[in-house]
Each structure stands twice: as structure tokens, then as C-alpha cells.
Image (cartoon, rainbow, N blue to C red):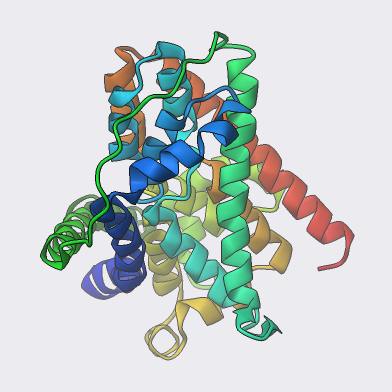
Length: 344
């Protein structure tokens, strides 16, 4: 459990803390300098084209760090239809929890080479995933404002704070706080989920010549889900990772690491990195479909819970989960079928 569950699983997530802190640092500097409100003012005309006001910009930008505080920040939006629409599209912003998944798959399947001087292919793919999330959120807002949240848009008026240099002590304290929150999440939700997955994936013991991950309790549960996700290119290992990843998106990384650690013998597990194992185990269309899935899928129980609290019922959380899973399935399927058709 320590080697295959805690070290292989949780350790695969902890290594992404530096990248997540870089993202938080940029957001904290924008907030501390007084530019965030001005950015909302500048974006008002763009947001109006999809039926929202500039007030929705700040919650959506906050959702790049985490959708939970982003959804809570929608309380500043006066118009109820604007607020509801913002809540329903906030999970489409590429939150920090997606970064471990994106980084793992990109490093495993996308070659590290320059497209043009100063711009690498791996970074360009990551940027494209962010753009896909933003485009999906804008498209969803446009459809929602013309259907289930139909109504007249509200005007935009907000007090402009003064420009100021960020107090670096405040930025540092904010980063420490975010690091503590991330590590607490790793040490509670992700740790417990990974350990539970290890138990379910380790028993009963498979006979000689049979993969442990397929013979175990978790493997048999994943076998049922695999029949649903197989048409979009997902294999048994992905089906097993998707179930615990509902607790938090990062768990997908730890779940995959745990499954491969259980299936590998001691020498192989120690000598081969997770990225190289994935590179040989998955075809490229499957990896691209997996990325497309995580752009849209609402794999975060905390986001669903806070949506329920902010909307005072289960109607809108259920609607949000339903339409996001449908979009994720379609996007992953189109990605897999297109990549297969062109021979990737």
C-alpha cells in the first residue's frame, strides 16, 4: 500500500505543485495590483456577446485556479440569470486540478520540439486545451442564455480600485495558503481515494497469467464502465481511473499510477517512469481523447456540492453534470474518431 498506493499514487500528484503555484502567482498579482476589475471592464463587451456582463469575468477568471471559489464569487452578480449561467459554465474553465492530468499526458505523448523559435509543441498543446475550455464556456453560455437561462442582460457598473504595486508579502502568504490547501487535499481526499483504489485493485489476487487490475474488484467494476466508454477510445485502465477521479480530477493521475504500479513487478515499477509506461500502453488517439474528456467533464465532487449550495437544490447541479458529461463524451469521441481516421 505504501509503495504502490501512497508513493506511486499520491507522489504522482504532489510533483505538480510548482506548476500550480505559478498559476496562482499570476492570479494573485492581478488581484493585488487592482487590474482585475479593469480587466472585467475591458471584457464587458466580449461577455455581452454571449449574454453575460463584465461582472461574470472575475468569477470565471478565479475558476482557472479552482471552480469552487469561482462559483462562490458569483454572489457579486446581481442578475439571477447571469449568475446562474456563470455558475453553470464555471467548471469549463481549466482549473489547477486539470494541470496534473494535462502535464502527464502531454509529456507522455507530445514530442518536445520547437514549432517556432521560443514556442514548443508541448506548450502549444497545453495552451490549446485552455483555449478549448474558454471556447466551450462561451459556447455554453450562448446556448444557455437563449434557452434555460433566457432573459435580458444586465448593465455593468463597478467601482474601480486604485492601481498599486502588489505587496509581495501578501502574494507570498497567498501562495503559502494555496500550497497548504493543495497539500491538504492531497493528504486527505486524494490519499484516501488512492488507498481505497489500491485495496479494490489488489484483491482478490489474480492467478498466474492474468492482469491484477482486470481480475480485482476495481477491475470488474471498471469492466462495466468500459463498455460505455470503449466507443470513444478509452481502455480498461482509463475506465478504472475515471471512477475515483470524481472525487477530484487529480485523482486520475494517482489512480493511473497506482494501477500501473500494481500490474508492474518491482524492477519494472522502479525503472520506468509513468509517462513512458503510458506512451507504450496507450495509442495516441486514446491519449488525445482523454485530454478532450478532461477539458469538459465535471470530475469534481466539491464543485457539484458548492453548486448545489449556491442554487439551493439539486436541479441545476444535476443539469450541469448531465450536459457537461454529454459534451465531454462527444468531444472525446470526435477527437478519437478524427485522430484514428487521419492515421495518428
